[in-house]
Length: 344
Image (cartoon, rainbow, N blue to C red):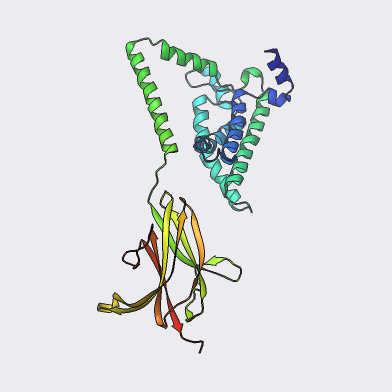
């Protein structure tokens, strides 16, 4: 015990005398920042568990503590003589909690709006710095304003009173009905905590799909969905970037098949297509983890000549059949190209 007293004496007076609720706000803010940024911890559900109170309650609580450092009483706890004194200053615990939620919901979007007009934008680290910095600044103001008040007028969280009341209600019920209600309350809390834990640790996967698209490179080396090659000379190749995005919620093997086809359209309004000739140009396999994207540059070298030929790219999950086609493919994309025998 003596060692603990000596250790506390080494701390600066503002830190040593920081009220328990404000010290909890500071500690919670620092723990949240660590849980969101430290490798190995940021991928765990702890990031969500701490992040929700960090954005929905803590900033508002610190701001309310700065605005109302005085102790308040509920309407049933003061008489008419004290009513004027309460209305002039403090608010009770229920009002403080309710205002903390409301102000947090208002303040955090405002901080995000301000960040949106800065070079840093709305990203994880700027949000942590913005919300955390505001919370710590409000906590410092709240601590100073409380110290300026007489000790009997300062707001304090009645932890001991709450614990004593909870112990009496849970372990010393006055009637069997109270005991049954206590058991029901405990079971409800366990069920609620378990439900939230399952929702956090096992989030819904949503729809499963794969992205499949074509891109090209501009003069600066950036990938764009424009300026696709349309004019080819047989024997010469041009590059095209094939993009695959895995949103299947599991690692997936893919096969890409590239073909050149001579296609005619028949039927009413040319709605039916018929492949009159086709050549397979290349195929390749790749394996992508969940939420991984692959961009691969392939060289297109048509083997047949003609106008309005279909340069077809088909995507398969797993192996592709020898006679790959649009009908059997999982995804497909294509370009219409002209291939001449010579540059003339």
